[in-house]
Image (cartoon, rainbow, N blue to C red; front, side):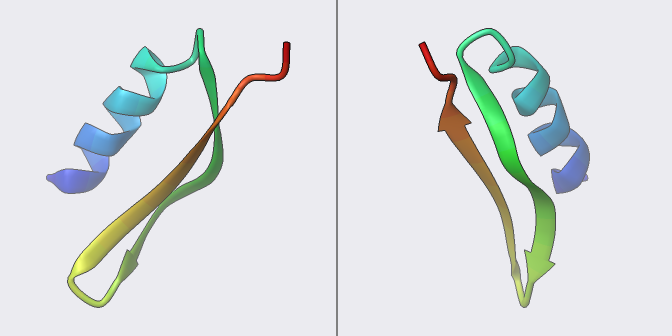
Length: 39
């Protein structure tokens, strides 16, 4: 399912980014916000 895929993507991006908003379903769209880590 799409949420599992996005969570796996978030784990892969942990070294360079931070999940600002966990996956949420908005109509037919699933949205997750990832921002770069502060240096």
